[in-house]
Length: 395
View 1: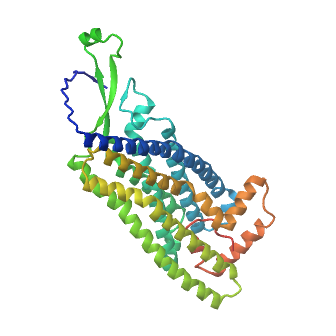
View 2 (view 1 turned 60 degrees about the vertical axis):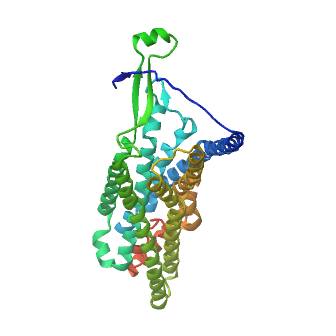
View 3 (view 1 turned 135 degrees about the horizontal axis):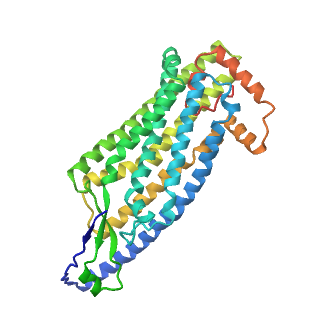
């Protein structure tokens, strides 16, 4: 990185302030200080604590979902669904890992004496984190669409939904997430400064070289950035939300009708309806969590960048950052608590986790698999509806 000779600027600053302005300034200073303190606590403590839980939970998800006892007796569509959940757990895990440095990286730092990790994280950390936000969202969309096809078009699903489909969709999602977030890597940049020989003689105790955080080629006020965030909002927020909402509403109705038909035609398969209800509940909770926990942060950021091109008032800027920190906490919770969701909803997942910690196979596991295979042979709807969590094959 080439360094530019630093030119010391000359400032002439005048302050004229009456008594009323002075009192207002003091009140604003107290508010700004309080909100800044709470914002730092949320971003450096709460977010990191939730990410710690998320790392542990997603590791358990990865281990449980890849156990041979879980996937050995599955059909190709069930294995495809489980592979999708493995990809989701991996994406959530990486999202939690990339947010760990918030515990020690100063979010207000703009100068560094060397090209340290802190400097690069301030420039590129948010961009990398956004990659996994997009990948997790679209992996959920792919699973919802797959289940929609499996229920509404079961014959076509048998030809489409398999391990090749799962692997291809995961690769496409991760590549697409990287491509969609590439412009963010030009949002900020590091600029190297150095003192001239004369300046070094004048300031012998100053470091001759340092680095500044500056606005990049795609800064917030540039036309290119404005166009980019519109495209990003459509592809990463709007389309996924509409797709998940559509699939959720349609699948709830379709699965309700399917369960009623099964109760009339095959009353002996009571577990089939139970599994269907678990799958429907899981998808509903995932969609609601995405709408309530992930989308608000993205929508708020988009509106702010469209309506207000730049925030120059320090009070408004502080309030905005505080609101964003709250929404970031909600977003991190969404990517960290899928493990809790599976534990609460899926009895088969609970048994698998219990086997992990007890280091022994459940005595009923063989019978459970045999029962599942029997149901798979008797109906074409039940296995196709197990796309949401790939773990509910406990009929």
